[in-house]
Amino acid sequence: MKITFIRPNMLPVRGRDAMEPLVFAILAGLTPRDVETVLHDDRLEPILFDEPTDLVALTVETYTARRAYQIATEYRKRGVPVVMGGYHPTFLPEEARQFADAVVVGDADALWPQVVRDAQRGQLQRLYRDAGFPPLDNLRPDRSIFRGKHYAPAALVQYGRGCRFACEFCSIHAFYGKDLRQRPVENVVAEIESTGKKHIFLVDDNIFVDVPRAKELFTALIPLKIRWSCQISVDVAQDRELMGLLEKSGCTTAVVGFESLNENSLRQMKKHWNLKHNDYATSVQIFQDHGIMLYGSFVFGYDDDTPDSFDRTLEFAQASKFYTANFNPLTPMPGAALYDRLAQEGRLLYDRWWLDPNFRYGDAVFRPKGMSAAELTAGCYRIRKAFHSLRSIASRGLETRTNCRDPYRLGLHLASNFVSRWMIDRKQGLALGESESSESIDTNLDGWERFHR
Image 1 (cartoon, helix red, strand yellow):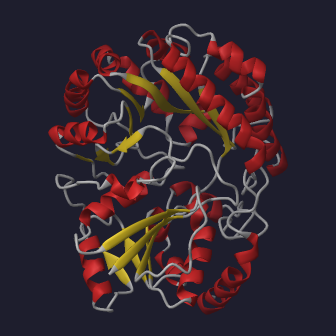
Image 2 (tube, one colour; image 1 turned 90 degrees about the vertical axis):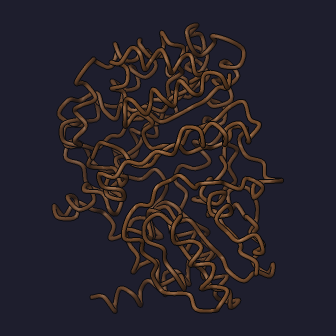
Image 3 (tube, rainbow, N blue to C red; image 1 turned 90 degrees about the horizontal axis):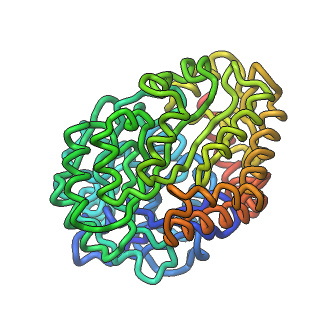
């Protein structure tokens, strides 16, 4: 038997910053040794639809749903069964089932061996759902699936899953609830050592969910003498011992969701805890005093945001010398509380923006209160461009505590900014998926919508 794993692309352009799709290494590690596995990454290479295979497995995010359905349709035309999993099919299994022979709801780890056995017998179930969240003790990713692919040089490793916060716009809490799981630290250390890479990205949604476990992990990383990156909540800055361990263990860059400078917006998104211990300027200084380069993330469109919010946020991001930053229109995702609220308020501009052929990347998808949807779209695009201007890149690169602390960090700063600068115009305004494949998607969905009316 042969299984083809596919990571769909969001847009019809090839990227320069694609990272390893760790989910497929995890699934490959759970696949029986007598089953052949191959990975096609739509972000890097054309998909070989006519290459013989017995099962296609796709991981589907909301932004990649349209392309995933197009890919699935092509394989099913050829008689190849398709299984889908991930956040999007978990929240919208009925939608995904219009394009897949089987849908996995929730984490696939415990279910995958059964999916493979059923596929071997030609008896795939329409829906697979695990009643709980199994422990992560037995994760053994098989990275041989990445061989020959040109990914970013950092290896992706997962320590835990879940987040202790429940921000309104985020799907993570809707997916995992209050469940927080971490792998044994010795397993994580062994996996990092097995990669042979000197830069690791710990992909946890928030590496700071449990103080004692975080300290255990960071302490165990010190002897490895690696550089690593993570996603982390800003409140870690109030724990000086943890910050010291982050620095000693080699934490080089961190993605931090600042989200907004407006306290009312933070309160509305249920993220006012961002300012519980320190103001932003103080937290930023603490990170940078420990040599950690910051990737600042911001969203716009909450009810107190106005056109003035853009320039104020841009000024803060530049003054803070973030090595990179993202400025996005607030986008309601299925499964998140924000989506349900905006739908109830009648403010959504699309029934399902992720499948609508008129939606374009970067567009606002709802009606804000403090500005028009067009102003929201234009404001995010404008400051994204300004932040990645040559003058801004040079100015931020002169931050001696972080961005030019050493040649390695300066190289990260320049590479990240120039790739982002190159991609901004290439992505803005593009339709999701492949336009030439859209007819079959729209036909299937029209039929599904009539059935469910």
